[in-house]
Image (tube, rainbow, N blue to C red):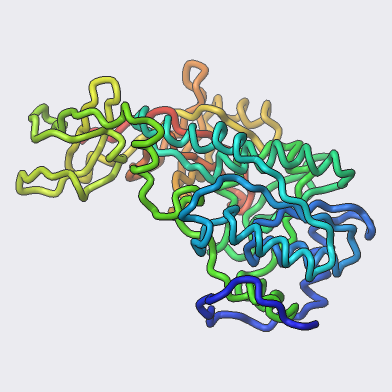
Length: 403
């Protein structure tokens, strides 16, 4: 198969491993678990992962339809490497689909994406929260709206390039971490509903990223060396504060920087400049390292304190989602169900207990957890089977360890 350049001037990626193509195809076929010839919609972002998914399923003998979402029109993103769903990536997805030999559609979801993801992102900072826009995107635009399109196209499943496993559990599906834990994306998918999980397929679950690049290389796709997506896709410059200032200028109101002991240490130009755990950019000097430990949007106060003040004893969840029998999980929570709680994608899950307190779903850590912020997600795993995702929720509020 002749090679086709999909992206120009790509930096070489040295870790590209040879992959047994037949084994990769069989792995994808096993992940789908549907009769050959079934129609599968492949969500194609223009990156190596989703492109390889479409190619493997096509080779496996499925009727594959590629769909790419136009999520925003950000001038700086059109030629920005590592920003998904922008101009260059849509171009790459279209050319890849042509090379693979599958039909391909581009859907304009800019309005939906702005309402469900970008506006929510900006509003969260106004509330003193730390949002996770990738989870909101999966939860709404991709795994709600796009799934409806896949069904309208007559597809029996939708496949994505996420690194996570889907296993059958009785008459419902179970979400598990990917084989390659360093690439596992289960944290970003905890909000996937049971019905959505039944319809979704993840053909890369048993592959490592260098193997996926190897498949792309063997297929002759230059995206084998395309860099992974970086930063927040709709903030290609990495400067999210400029976006928030434009969308929510009311966040640019001055306030006080206050030590947790009550001392006023200085002033700030806007609460949206700060997140829980932040140390740099405080512009106060008291002879000791200080961190943002709390944000008070009502008073516009930024509360700072020593690092130990960041330790969280417990947190309350809202918008919970359960990937098991909800009634059984909540019944066990009445007695304090042991769980592994993951509050950031880059942090390992910590031992904790799931509890119900006055109707609220709470996570009580065995030991203090550092840097937990309202607005973040908390994914929960089964201590008896740490690869299994139980569900999770968004963090509404936290209780600090007594200092």
